[in-house]
Image (cartoon, rainbow, N blue to C red; front, side):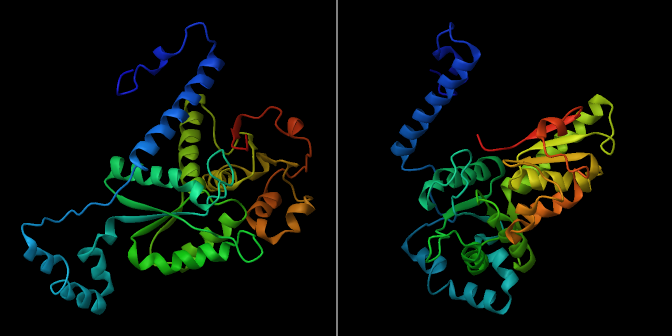
Length: 301
């Protein structure tokens, strides 16, 4: 096997069909990932970027010299972006309750994915990031969004931005909305905003190729989690007609008669879409998606 993994397909018997090859490839990659993560003890570490040309340099990077840095930042907190790594430092925060396709993995179970996000930021953009998987469960064992909110508010003086990741709905909505409103640094929810931006860009280009206008196409969404609800909101802001949109969760299409959604204030983002989309209140998804121009599917496996 080539170290680049470019010849990965050559590892599998040619008589396997496409589905079998895909399944074998996934299984191989999972086993290889587990082995290499165990070998390296993860994939991230911290190293100094400043030089050390002798023991006396500890007096510059630490005490007594560093006192000048502390007092300068004390008098002008914006100086922290210039005198520390804060301007290039991102906190990847998760409670690991919705880890990719694996669901709730327990707080430490998300470390592989969060370190992976830090790995991508460093290799692709030169940004330093650290994985912070927190236990959001309260005394009743329920995942409490307030615990994540307070955690991020307390850590923001050390970071230049926060990347929220793999927080299950509906908690993810409240966490993002409140932190964007109250924090002094950028807060980004990758599963919602990141996926939303990429999908919107793909849709715009696809419609150009197809020669169709965004305000005239019928769009169907399979799944009504954090990603699809955010995508729908972005697409509507980009000009899509909400009355030509149908969004379905596990109980069927959203519409203004979905009392189960209306009754739970935690799902306020989903209820907003209930009031905007599917004005005919079609309750059968197969019927609702007939003659749809676009299908966006982001649902549980």
